[in-house]
Image 1: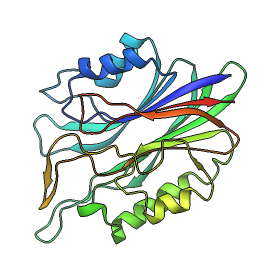
Image 2 (image 1 turned 30 degrees about the vertical axis):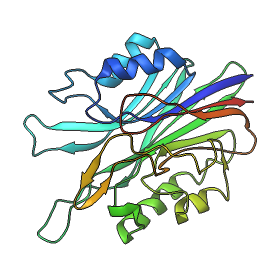
Image 3 (image 1 turned 90 degrees about the horizontal axis):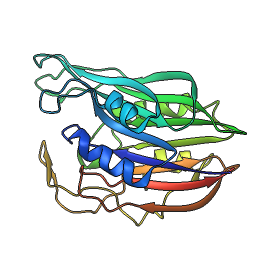
Image 4 (image 1 turned 90 degrees about the vertical axis):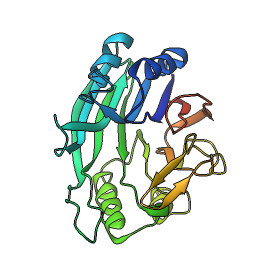
Length: 247
């Protein structure tokens, strides 16, 4: 059978109706999202539940980071939505939050979200994550520690597995190189970029054009890639990736 997977960092400030519009247009069988919010005042919705209800999909959502200095506290996380039933819903913390200091920017809590999708005649493991930002997407010691914990989480995922996410790392990073030892690139070639569609400025790092590949779909080699594309859409600062698999 064939089934489709969409990977997308939807951006914490994106309106839920815009996200829903894209998902309804492409109707992927499995959807992996990052920066999904539940309690941002400017959003006003529990986004994973809003999407699951309107799409009539199964959902697995886990909070990655909570901004406790906000009133009320605000959260963002990862979620997996599916037309097919989900089981073994779980997540793994791959970076704990650390507060800002006079000399550091602090760290946001990060997780890998995992579940098993029950296709009609097969079961597929799906993993999605949103790794932390580093200036210029450098592989700092903190980023390498996070990447190593992510790789440890994937250790048992060697068959019928799809790994997606916004890694906040380029295709030349050691993490991507290490992942490709086990998984195939199931997205478009790495010269096709996914970020940024909006001006970005943070701690002296600036980007304004679509020059970076930060988003990925990888898969074990027992899954056949039928087609894959980066979608051109007006929402979020990341472009989604849509891949059709055959199992």
